[in-house]
Length: 311
Image (cartoon, rainbow, N blue to C red; front, side, top):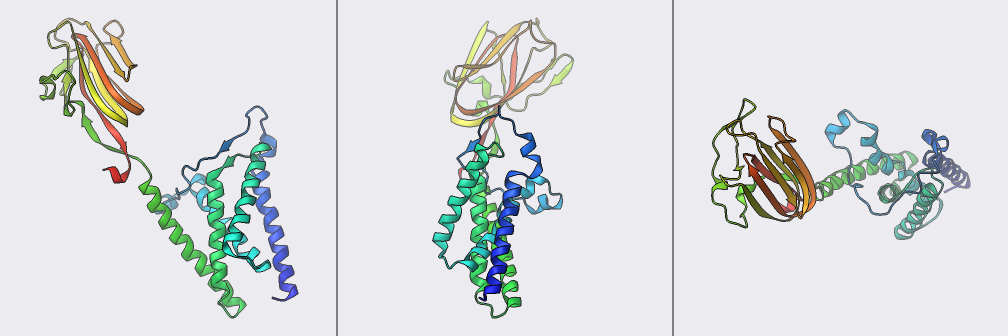
């Protein structure tokens, strides 16, 4: 490399570094919106750095859809330019680069001009690695035009590979809602036999109700309790409740999960119509339903949050 080309590359690297630092610290009016009362923000654990926009997202992209790509693409030039200036091995280059990004993210957080986000660190490092990979392909070209072509093609190929790989990993490590599990499919701790039978229709406030999965009531008693083991799962619980038109408008219902009351209703609090609720639980082990009077609870069940390999 001639001295002239080296000076050009050095100037380009300095200018591009200033450009990136400007966007990281001053762009989008950050300096004018600093709130000293908000405190420092350090997100040390990576969460969604594998989330890149899908093809359907790119048809109608939003700013957030492009942030992941931007965090990678903006740092590709460093993987190209720095090795051209200094002969350095990949491992050493990545170590120095990651330490530099960690320092910049820390300064962002301490100056309240941003936050320390481990997702950004990982995505920036991936971009630098893509640039270094394209630099290796570029070395094989025998002309400037060939170098530019090799760099462009290799960046495109590596980015497509990362996009696909991130999509697979994101899919594998993203939880999704499983199928609906009716409560009567589980074993009641008391052994109620009638809760699994498909219930008859009834009316609430003149509206005909036809439960699809189950129905729970006091079964002619003053009060009845149902208890189920949910298996310490992460889930969403769903239920419907109300007092039928037939009989007196009296009754109450209490639903608890692991001793925490999530629903408590009585005829005095209810209107003559159906009610429904859903609740999320990071861990749910035991569900208890206590019903009194003419109250009915139906189509109660849950959908578990699962990883793909647990299906």
